[in-house]
Image 1: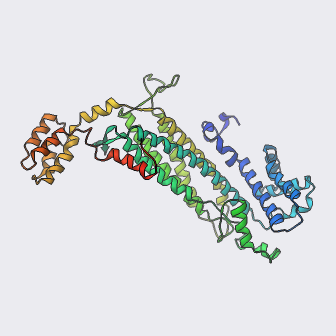
Image 2: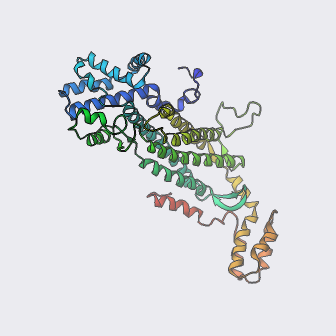
Length: 459
């Protein structure tokens, strides 16, 4: 498909950022995963449960149906679907056709044995989501490493912090980056622990047909073995016809928090760029504005914010909708599940653009120092706090009268400190030596503490 013909930006404008998802979440990817599950189930009931004569050579021949699956194979499945108008049944017919071609036609009625379509679909999607989660998790880990490296490099660089957009107390550039690192790390640890879950229990989750056909088989144990050992997923026992999809909801709610944190960081960095706290490296040939040649717009962070927002919208719907199904089954989950790949696509686009933006920013040290120097009123907090310690009357009110809504000079602040009646002389001298760039609390130590608690060094 030519990118110019794509309806979705995931396959069009941003296709280069989502390439690794194409073989997983495309129609081809879904069909291939269905074939995999059908083949694995056939091998399992023949080889493991011994339903028919299946020496190793036969098992290998069956296995080759999946291993040899390619685009041409996918088109053959779609040809079956053009007649059946049923996507999973078409996969069943394809596998049976492949058995016939391999001289194994006597085994074809074991294909899709006791399965409902959802047994094939929910396992296929679980495998797809597991891969998608792995890709997104790896990329987010790279983003975390980038943020941590910026925190290390700038842990001692003073910066004026802002609350409500107004000058507040000083911080360091590194400390502000480590705030986000801690948030991302927390959610990534949660994401890593969430297992994909599968059901393989027939039309209404009771193994009805299984027991009718082979009453002596421990079907619950067989399903658990198949799911855990053959598919590498967590068995889901109590279901209707469909997977209850709580695991998808858990994954997406975690990714919602991650995406929202990403938006928060994008907006902060965007603002720091607008304040000239960060500069952006120009790239040869790039244009910032169609009419203003001087501009370098923070487009990477804007793109990241926008695409994270789209991902959140999709995940909010999917993570609640997939928990609902009328009675034992309706097909509303089937159509919305086809959008799962878009979720991972938009997240990849967002994270990759954020990382691109982070690679282009530089700390504007002179501007940081200038803002700190020009906002001496930042010292109103420590002065009034020390006044409280030594019993000066109305410390907050006095500093408010001196500093609120106006700039003060060093001379005026020093005169105010000298006028204090109860603060000892040596403490006054320490206050007079205090500057916004040294009034940092334990900001630098907090960066070190983050790395120490995670078994790393901040140097």
